[in-house]
Every structure is written in C-alpha cells, then in structure tokens.
Image (cartoon, rainbow, N blue to C red; front, side):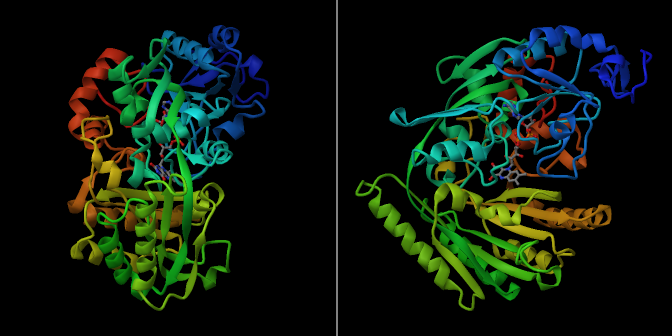
Length: 502
Ligand SMILES: Cc1cc2nc3c(=O)[nH]c(=O)nc-3n(C[C@H](O)[C@H](O)[C@H](O)COP(=O)(O)OP(=O)(O)OC[C@H]3O[C@@H](n4cnc5c(N)ncnc54)[C@H](O)[C@@H]3O)c2cc1C
C-alpha cells in the first residue's frame, strides 16, 4: 500500500502507519483508518510514532541495548480492551507483541503493534485469605510495595522494574523459591485473554490444561490480565555484602557449594564475581575485581510457630558462611527490611544500562566448573563484567517436572548469570565474545535452560531458530505444550516469546 501522506509529518492524523503484517516481514504502509475500529472499541489509547508519550512507552526500561520502534502502541485500560485489541489484530493480520515490564526483546519490535499493559498495574492484597490479586502489567516493585503493608510476600524476583507478567509466565525465581517454590507454584488462578479474544478464568479445576501451560510457558497462550497468588508472612530477614579480594573467589565458591547444596531452605546466599564498588559509587579507576559473598536469609511464619527451629538452624549456617573465609575487606551484613532492603540488594549489580547476558542452570559447582568460573572471571575484559551464582533447589525440586509447564525441578543447583554492562558498541562486542566463550565452556554442565534467563540459553539476542527454542526451554513438557497450543492458539497468534512452534 502506498503512503497517503508524509510519514514523518508531526500529525498522525494525516499519515498512514508503517507496519509489518503477519503475512510478510517487509514493512508496508497500512491506512490509518485500520485503527478506527480499534479506537472506537477501547477505552484505552493508541500511540503513534509522533505522539507525545510514544517515546516513554517505546523506550526499554532496563536494557538500553534493545532499541525498537513499533508502528503503534496500544495501551488498554482493562481486560475488555485487551480482548478487543486481540480480536482487531487477528482480523487485520497484525503481528501483536505483548509488553509487560519490557525487559526482553519479545515485548516490542520494529513496525509491529505493541499491546502495552502499563495501565493494568493494580495490586490488591487480601491478608485474611493470604492471597494477592495482581493485574498483568504490574511491576515486581509494585507487588512488593503492596505486600509490605501487610508484612507478607509472594515469592518474586530481585529487580523491582521487572514485569510480574513476563516474570511469572516463565516460572519466576526469587529469594523465597527455595522455601516455597517457583512463583508459578504459588499461582492460584489467572484471568486470561485468549487468541480468539475470549476472556477466561483458569485454575486447577477450570481450564486446567491452560492453567498448567501458563505455569511456565504462559506467553505462548494468552495475555494474563490478572494473577492471583498465595502470600506468605515474613518473619525476619538478613542480607548484605561481604567483599573479598578476587584471589578468594575459589574459596567462596567452595563455601557456596558446601553450604547450599542442598542447605537450609531459608538461605539464598549467592556469590558474585564482579568489580567493586559498583559503578557510580566510586571513581572508575577505584573499581577493582572482587569476590563477593551475598548472605541472604529470609524467615517465614510467626514468632514462636513450628518454623522456629528451621529459622534458627538457617541463621547458624549463615554465620558459618560468613566466617568460613577470612580476610574480607568489607562486611556489611545485618537485619534487613525484606521489601525495601533485601529485594533491592541486587540492584547495585543490575542497574539499567546497555547489557549483554548469558545464563544457565547447573546442578553442582564441581571442581571443573569452579575452575572455569574463576579462570573466566580472571579474563573479564571490562569492569562491567559479573558472574553471579544464585542457589536454586529446595522447594523448587519438590514437585515433579510435569506438575507445571516449568519443568526444571532440580533438587540442588545454581543459576549462573554471565552479565556485562557496556558503554558502547565496541564494549558490547567485547562482552559478547567473553560471555559466549564462558557460556560455551559451561555448556557441558548445563542442567536446565530457564525461560526467564536473561539473554537466554538460545535465541534472544543471538536469534536462534524458532523450531529449537521450544524443546530447549520446555524439556519433557514440550510435547504436551504443543497439544495445548493446538487447542488454544493453533494459528500461533502469541508468537513473540520463547515460542512453541506447532
Ligand atoms: C535485571 C533483571 C533481573 C531479573 N531478575 C529475575 C529474577 O530474580 N528471577 C527471575 O525468575 N527472572 C528474573 N529476570 C528475568 C525476567 O523474569 C524475564 O526477563 C521476564 O520475561 C521479564 O518479564 P517482563 O514482563 O519484564 O518483560 P517483557 O519483555 O515485557 O515480557 C517478557 C515476555 O512475557 C510476555 N508477557 C509479558 N507480560 C505478559 C502477560 N501479562 N501475559 C502474558 N504474557 C506476558 C511477553 O509477551 C514476552 O514474551 C530478571 C530480568 C532482569 C532484566
């Protein structure tokens, strides 16, 4: 279709819109009038390139490396708006991306139409029933803030800016996961908008096949407009950083393996091989390689309840971890507010910027794995490079792999993140080489490829073939997921994700 006006004109009222349609990858001009039906049907707004507000909705919130320019951004006000947008996109063969927290490359794409869930951000905590209702576009920080009022928490991740939507539908790991499992293990119900536009409720008894699929592969099946989670009472919390010279990296990894495999469930102590202090805290020249122990303890329950003994034992192991390696150059560990302290603790190592990342789950920090980690950190080419190890196992491994679409039920293990915050394209290329090499060396030890892995094991920034992605990420559940996909989204309307190709 030919443009009927100047595409670069300021007023969107006089121009057509450059879009990529499902039938073709080449962008073509689509008459602006295509949006008339949609605008009439929804209470929310449609933003085009020159509209005020477009730039804020388009911009990545965390990884500035991802710069995309959707043809239009639709901001719905409720589930009905989501439904109308999906029906409209289906009718006009428009490739719709779904934006929650906008942390991944799947949420916005050049010349596509983005459905941005920003306004669906309400969180309602019901303390008498120990549940929280969360709209599909809320951020983890908003969930934590609402829960803090009642002294409770949903097991959730460590970056406030992450979308509850994308995070949950991939599984969801956080400091409470070793005690209470993945976030999807604590999901009780969803309100979901299907590829047909139908709004449905799914839980263990209603649309249970859909509910199962949403618990780990959800982006493939629907837009979730409301999650209902179980909440837990926070009893006590300890966290902080203990910093060592890099020569102590191996000793800290040994402590981690020894005390966290399996280790007390209230502990989520991590190790970071990084440069300290973090950027912005000290001049660049003062930032030096460091091995950092990040002791983390969260006690759940009420004073004097049956969990007292477990909490006490866990705190004793935490002390052991902190005393195991002498010669720390700095220790800042103590009682913490769970919501405003612990949940923000990792922020120093993951501030918004330009990032390149790789990640994988491994079962054991064997001697060979530790050798690779230490040697690769020694070769870290930039001060923005970090290798982080977060413990998994515990309650994550209590369920069978087939109990949810998320299949990786490891009894012990570590989430290894190879992260680089870079300044420019030249540094990006350097970081990519280092991360790719580190990932390749660790690959023989990979026990799981987690959907929420930043950067991902395949695909993502490196653009792997869609056909292999599903099998890598969903393991033994892939076959059943294909069946559920056929039932709910045979035309693969929800394709901008770690896609299950039918
Ligand atoms: C700094 C940082 C820290 C992180 N920490 C953790 C962590 O501690 N634990 C952890 O498990 N993960 C963590 N992650 C990974 C994160 O959970 C995933 O990247 C997740 O996909 C981000 O979701 P989003 O909504 O922010 O991103 P988006 O890019 O908006 O969405 C990601 C995917 O989910 C889909 N989606 C989004 N919302 C919905 C919805 N409501 N319904 C259906 N589909 C939806 C999108 O279509 C897209 O395919 C972290 C990521 C970053 C960048």
